[in-house]
Image (cartoon, rainbow, N blue to C red; front, side, top):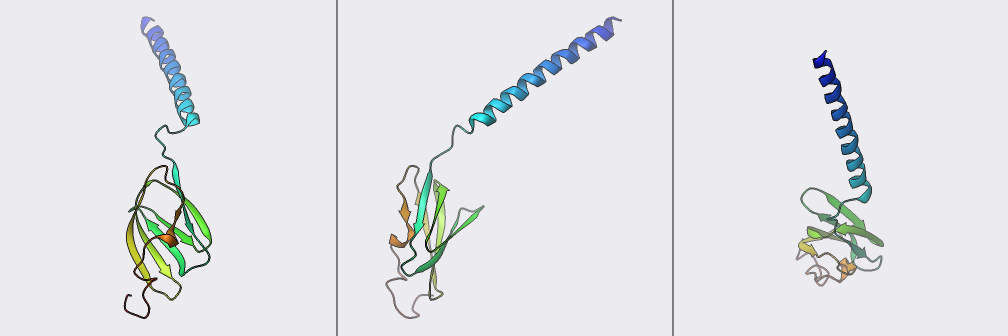
Length: 120
């Protein structure tokens, strides 16, 4: 019967370890990720030539319409802005952690200053 006692003891040890690990996991999930960076707020005013914008980080795409705001994590994005006349432009956009709100309409653009169909 010595084998039965050692199996019972081993199962008790495994049960205690499992309870401790579940408790530790619960604590980590409750505290949240420690490396989370602050988000950056993006604005696209309702007035102005832009009707919308899309930001692509390679895996996810975020859309923003005129008059809306969006908060994204800091990082590198590809920004596509859409003019009301149907034209669009793309440019890289770096969003550093802790940056103030970014007005997408205030970024430099070759399209908003041009007239006609020279840039499509």
